[in-house]
Image (cartoon, rainbow, N blue to C red; front, side, top):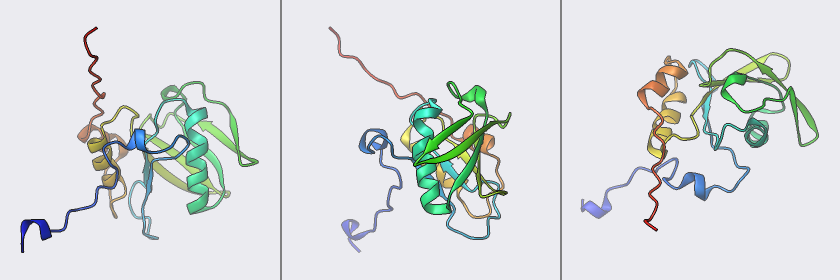
Length: 164
């Protein structure tokens, strides 16, 4: 088999993801199994710590895959100005502040069906985000969100300015 014939593995999140994805799109991965045996049910990579801007796209994406979202639990200290509720597509979604850490959000569907999502910090490099998100949705994952993020630390993107 020639080198050019070898299949190349698909990249789930391209390197230019934050520029390539249109505003209002959630960077989200969910487990594709019904067993829900792992610690986490998915991963979310927001663009910023502005929850009022980031949350509507996440709620829309989750509603499309899981059904109506009724509550979001998060650590208010990890986000800028957390409201008590948001309205997304004419539906009220309550926000609850829990000391869950900035590495997790808890999603409630219906009355009592909960999903835990790893939150990849906004300044994480695309390669590190890919690794963290893939690990979070690995079937049977028993690694806590904080441990996944420690193994794939956020590294601020370096922006080189041209000399004046």
